[in-house]
Length: 409
Image (cartoon, rainbow, N blue to C red; front, top):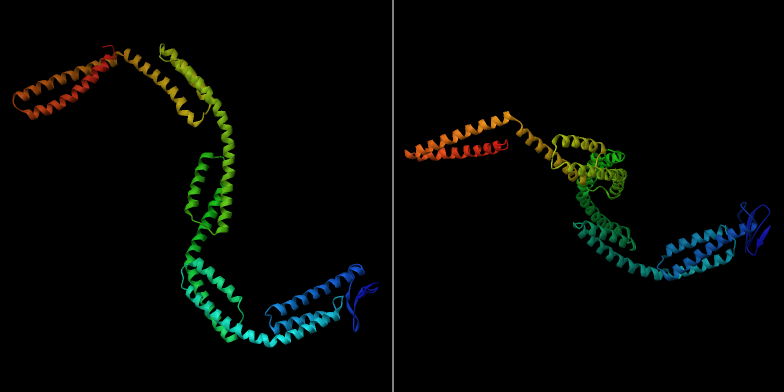
């Protein structure tokens, strides 16, 4: 058994408190030692002491109503009378009795104060109602909404009036808030619908983006991601929380794809860099074939170089035009040498060129004679027309003569 000046615990675990009327049963304790039982119920006693102290301060320093104070006192008295704590319960009863006397002595004073406060509260609530009714017509949705919420907080901080007056003012106040809320909801209804449509559209974009994240079709997939980004921007904004979540998923899918692509491209670029060095060496080798001295040998050598070229593989895209252009330059030089050789060694082509030149020369001579005849007869219009025709034939003749020279005259 364990005990202290205000309580004890017997062998069965029953806890008692000592009072002026004798010992009272506090409760039963089976969870631990007797000392722990006494300590537990002593803490409950201290809790009641704290509550009484707080109530005493409230009664002395605040405008706590007599009714509320009495209710609080009875609540505490019930805790004391139920004997669920170990300590000087009689002292607590005396403090509560004294507190009752204090409340009674201030009741009349409080009644006069309450009348004054009620009048002030009525004027304050009427001012809140007037402001709320003015704000109900506002289109400054954010600032007016914030102000109305602040007015509600202010209202809650004011004391209640008599039921009829308070209900009438609250009805006007609530009606003003409701009117503003309805107007604001109507204003944002279409915006909410648009955000929901944006959410649905972006959800589809996210699903597609995630399905593409493992693709190795680098070009087509990167292009599709660009299109998806364009569609994302065009879809508008969803609700903030949904927007952030969808964007994180969308961006995450892209990051997976582009990280994989970058890794592959880095390996490819290294390989293509080596390929470029090899092709540049072949380009140098091909360029040594120009100017062409032995066409047959040069052509055979170029074919061999080209076969080695094709076996090497791709080079970096930015470098491709330059290195391939060097090979094309050599190839054109070979083609021009071949054409020149063909013209020199093809008697049929030379005969056709000579025949064409003779026909054009005859046509030019004939036109000159016709022009002279027309001018001699005074037909200048016909002469001018024939002169234009002569100009065209002469140009063809000059071109044919140049081609004939390429056959060795």
